[in-house]
Image 1 (cartoon, each protein chain N blue to C red):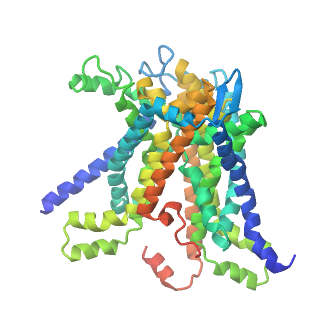
Image 2: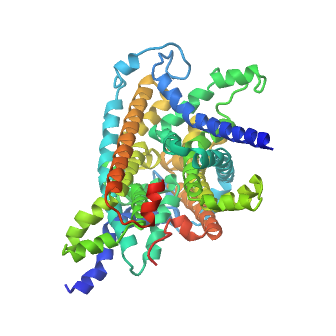
Image 3: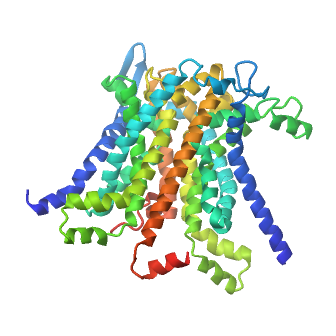
Length: 283
Length: 290
């Protein structure tokens, strides 16, 4: 019995390991093939090790500009969506008001709508109004739109577990509502806001479908790849993908590390010796 | 302004910018698309609103194959995501120990690489005379002139891969929340492992499974990138049709009608799931002030 049980355990672990491999192999392939020196236009078959693509990552015409556009759109849409979404989340969690339930539903619907539909609908509107003309502005409008719901949901989940007595304490000590928000509420929900901003940035820089509908002749990095995929896939594309990958991993690790440090510092503070304290002590 | 009135107005003021944006660039665009879907004409002569409801029936008739294929592929991809993702989430949640966060990071690593490039990577992996095809040919599983690229297999594999983390993360979140004492109680009552899993763990993780299936199925059914890059027109899904009708053929009424049909199917599906799972789990509004 125990032998069979141990066998089953081992099998389950091995299966999970294989699933992880499935997730990671394509990423490894991209990194490896960024060092390839392909014959022909497509980077599909391994030929020989080469550093050429890494030495000149922006040698392919247009790729640098596309990447620059993508970064600009991502930065601006992250700021826009994070501000609008955080305000919306605050209203939804902190206040009781008429119409909260339908608003919750309304925020959810864009998430349940396929991207093609979001992109196509927005294009219908731009085509009918004739303004603004398709380009950077319309891409930005679209990115803030599809990021908003994600920000609301991320910040809201952080707000739900929020200890309101801290704000009441601040108000009792004579803080104005604005001071309470700036000095107490905002720092406490900051991890949620940062997580939402990171998510928004990642979604924006990665988006192809909605952008494709509303870009006009402006080219973002995903649009550049799409155009390239039909004619030629130079290894430089894999190099830039690897760079973005390493950059994201670095940002991720720094964020996690800083949050850990913040939590550790919070844990040192003399807490009320309640059940929460006991739980932390045993953890 | 009296304080009480200001207090009552505050939530609406906070909502205004965000909701306004969604109204202007999500809700109203849908109305424009609704009007578009009832027009007739061509790009050269211009489109006129003629309340042409047959656009819908024609769209359904002409592209029924792509519709069915979309739901078939999305259903298969969701099923495979569950079969691959649930055990992985289970192992991370219950056996990950102090490596849990590191393992979770590995699960979302694919998201750090651009979607299109992940798909191109599959094109590399499955390409003719690539390692996978060569190995399968040596083993005799694939005939010597057989290929994996440009088949249903490659398209479904790509979709499964691209949306797998959307299944793993919510399942993990709900498994992690399972009270371990419940499982111990199950064993104390002489439940066998299988019984404890089927009667305690699995039911308790159902909210995560429901969220995961939706998060996988919805984008999968609307996807066209995998079919375009890893398939041929014989694998094209409804997303391919919508984007080519809109951006290549400029047949806006048909594309708009197809978009609405797709959205309607999705909403029906979400509502059915909501009935099964409860709306609170779905909208993520559990624990809000009532």
